[in-house]
Each structure stands twice: as structure tokens, then as C-alpha cells.
Amino acid sequence: MATESSLNGAAAVVRALRDNGVGTVFGIPGTHNLEIYRHLTGSGIRHVAPRHEQGGGYAADAYARVSGRPGVCVTTSGPGLTNIATAAATAYADSVPLLVISPAAPLGQERADVGWLHEVKDQRSAMDALYDRSVRASSPAQAAAVVHETFARWRVERPRPVHLELPLDVLEAPWDGDAPGPLTPAALRAPDEVVTAAVSALRGAAAPLIVLGGGARDASAQAVRLAELLGAPVVTSVSGKGVVPESHPLSAGASVSLAPVQEAIEGADVLLVVGSELASSDLWEARLRPRGTVIRVDVDLRQLHKNVPADIPVHGEAATVLTELADALTDRPADGNGRERAARLREAAAGAAMEMGSGWRAVQDVLRECLPGDTIVAGDSAQVSYFGTVPFWPMQAPRRFVYPTGYATLGYAIPAAIGAKLAAPDTTVIALAGDGGTLFSVQELAVAAELGMTLPVVVMNNHGYAEIREEMRARDIPETAVDIHGVDFPGLGRAFGGHGERLDGLDDLPAAVERALKASGPTVIEIAVP
Image 1 (cartoon, rainbow, N blue to C red):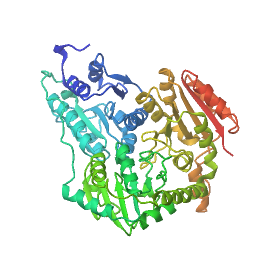
Image 2: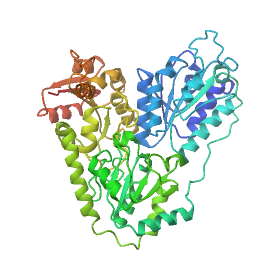
Image 3: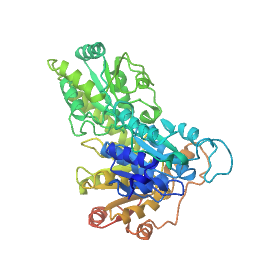
Image 4: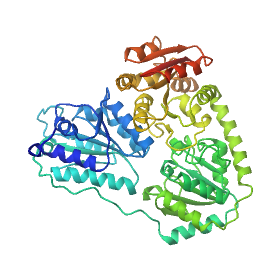
């Protein structure tokens, strides 16, 4: 337990985390970050130790996506920090608030090249290229201030990962306990004249359509209300999946990547885009050219004309703007054909999804049938996710599907499922991945076992990297380094302290899931894919 006489830079940072409501930190202790661990002990902040920093980063990322609260990781300098780099880049691509705290060479030794343990040529600059920003603190008080500023900015700006670098002499420097407290930023509100212009366009729309991205995740009720007032069909990106319940008659699902939906987007006379960059990773390399009036709502000014220029750019927070729009449109007669248009769009989207991924539908249907309706699914960048879960597993609320959309990394599912379960301990969570991606982070099963975490891990084994294998075939390239054989996945589940089963098909999957949900620890359920 820290005493007043032991207060130092590490204590300043830990207190700032606690004051900003942080309850869980992921990390691995190392030679240079031990002072942080001195002060985490007794702070009331739970520490969860992954088996690899990348796994810790993915777990913190999913913790943030599910809880709506920032994820926090502690690494050591050098290799610990570079190990988490891919997870940070994933959080950057998908706008996830992730704070990574690491030690560094003492002040004045930047780029010194003296052979310091874990020395990186320029650690801060390297991280600054991957994170939203990397800040090198020069004093304990400044380190605490960076934490406060970061949390405050996340509440009013696009949330992206931040790296806080603590030089060893700052980390260990005496601190008098005096530091500013958390900041309360003013809510971001769009100018009245811009909102009025958007209202005017929507009021006169004959065939409006709404696109929701991850930036609308905290505006679910507001989005539903506006869609119903307009009678407008709603489609989402993967990050926005479930913002409008996918059972709602105006919802056409997380379908912006599908050609019929893209045609409808281009054909809308008024297109309202909320919290989405309409990126190629969302659209699967397509480029949209809407013919109607484009209204874009985003907290990030840089988003308002990205990929698709806005006719009416609205710089504001999603829930606030959608509320203002709906309040001004309560007297507008809803489009009587809206539900019919949505039904046609939903049918066309389902047909396109079946053309691309019909083989991945059955496992989604079986799992949906035998799991609670509010189950959280952690997916990998695997065909079972983007061809399967995205179109064929309707979500009734946001934050129930965690998936690395933009960076498309392998190895996300298992550690993300752990982070999701820590964020929502009373909710059923499953990991759903392919065999290739599972092997990137299978060691994190040991964390789930250590925590006694009930966690079904469904591994669809198609013996390698199927997507790359198919791309090689399409380009007439010899199939090289894409096959994986001889792995005992259920055995890995048992080896890491959990359980394991192998199934030859889907008939026995409900019973296997039922057993997994009664088990203490993770259960790897391997399903052979022809």
C-alpha cells in the first residue's frame, strides 16, 4: 500500500485513472513499470494480466466497445509497448478510446542510443504514428493532467487511442499530491443555422435514407425516433450494428457493404449519415456517389467531407443532433412507404448476403437459437464473421458485436471476448473465430481459465486461411502458406485450463454450447468445415 512518503509520478497517474472512474486495467509488469504496480495495489482498480500485451490491448479495446468506458493498458517500455502496437492500431481504425501507459528512457536520453534496457530509437515518435497522439510527460503533475485531458477530450471528440509515455525519472520523481482533477468539457452542439438547414432538407424528402456508423452507438433511442418520424429505412456499418434494432421494420441491417444497399444509398433524395466515415473497409472497396442531398453528422470535423462530401455538414454529437432534428420534425407526416421501402431493401440485402456467404448462415442460426437474445459476440477478421455474423445474426442493441472492422486483424476474438465479459459479467459472451485467427492469441484462454470465466469459444476449422486461399485461386497463384493442419483445438482448450470438444457438424452444437455455459472456464468447441 502506497504511503504519502512514497508518492511519485506513478501515484499521480494511478490517482488520475481512479478519479476518472477507471475500474479495470490490463497489463503485464516489467522492469521499468513496477512503480505503477506499487500504486495500483490498494487503489481499488482491478488489474487483469494477459499472456501477451497484444491480447491485453484487444481485451481493453473490447471492454471499451461493450461498456462505453475507455479501456486502459499498462506495458513496460520497448517490447511491451511494441507488442501492443497492433491492438492500438485496431483501436485507432475503429475509433475506440484506449489509453496505453508505458515507461520510457529518462528525460534527456531520447535518441541517445546508449544501449539502455528496452531502448527504442524514438519510442514516442513511433507510437505517435500509430495512436491519435503520444504524449511524453515531463513531471508527475503533467502526467496526471494528460490523463484528465484525454478522458475529457474523449467525451466530446472522436475517441481514438492515446499513449502516455512516462520517463523513468518522471515515473519515480517525488510528487506532493497536488494535481488538477478531472475536467468537464462543454457538450458539442452544432450551430442552429446548420441544424435548421438539415431539418429543411429532411422535411422535404420524399425518399430519405439513414446510414449509422459507430459514432451513433450512444444515440440508439434518438436514431429510432428520427427514423420513425421520417419513415426512413436505416442501414448501418458493422460498427453501427444494432444502433437501430435489426428487428425494427425500418432496419435493413448492417449492410452498407452490399451492392443493393449501396444503390439505395446513391438513390436517396436525402441521405443522412451519422458517425461514419463511409470507408472502403465499410463499403468493401466501393465508392459511393449519392445523387441526393447529403447530410453528415459527426463529432470529428475531418469526417464531414471524407469519402463522400456533405452538402450539409453538421459538426455535433450524434444524440444531441438527432434529438434536435426529431424535435423539429414532430409535425412532419411520416413517409407512408418507408416500411415498404425498408422491407424491399432488407430482402435485397439478404439475397446479396446469401450469394456471398450462404455457407456461414447455418452456424449463426444454430447459435442464435441456443443462446440468450442479448448475447455478445466477439468475432475475428474471419469469413464466419464478415460473411456470417454481420448479415445473419440480427442484433437488437449496439455494443453486442465486437469486431476489428477497419484494421481487420487476426487474433482479436478470444481476448476481445475476455474484455467483453469483464465489461458485462452478467451477459453471455462467446468468441467466434476461424482456426487461423485463433492461433494468433490462443494463449489468452489461460486468462479466461484463471478468472473462472464461462466462455464458449467456437472455432470454425477450415484448415487454414480460407479467404487468402480463395484469393490466390482467383488470381491463379499457387496456394502457398495458407494451409494449417494437425492442431488439436479442444486439446489446447484443456491445456490452458479450460475444456474442449470437437464436432463434425452443427447437430451437436446446441448441446455443446449448453455444456460450455455450465462450465467454469473457457470451452473450445471446434467445428469441422468441409
